[in-house]
Length: 180
Image 1 (cartoon, one colour):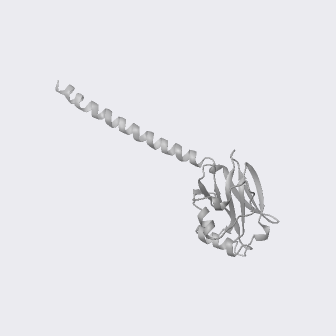
Image 2: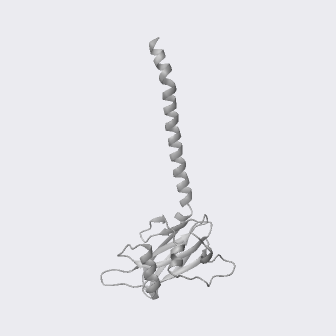
Image 3: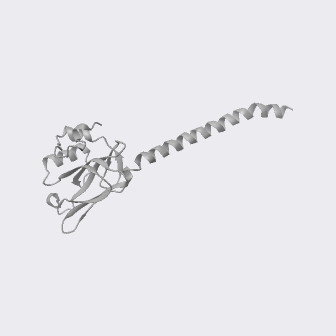
């Protein structure tokens, strides 16, 4: 009889512990799912470059919805600089680094000619693409030259460095209207 009373005491506690473990697992799974869904569109946006007769960056939006405020810049392959330094290089040395801005990019592949701005040196240093864009959920992203994708609040930094994109059409959202 004593064994049954011990079981009667432990059974509800064991059940509670199993329920808490199941709850923790469900919360973890839901967070992973939310993170995957959040990155879904952004993971379908890529950029890479090649050097043949000239330098070309290939920008591809393979998602079914457009991306916005696309900023492609040329950066050094030998230095992983903070965004602020990359923006300084683009702003004050555009002939070497350069940048392109595309207000709205639908689902397509786009070749961007960086020949005029492409630099190479004897030690193998050359310009590679870095990409900044905003997805349809208004999440701002950065795709690094090594392919790594990460969230990056870049719009206010572009404004701070004085980048102006006033040549966009009147029906498109201007960079000045976007906030981080």
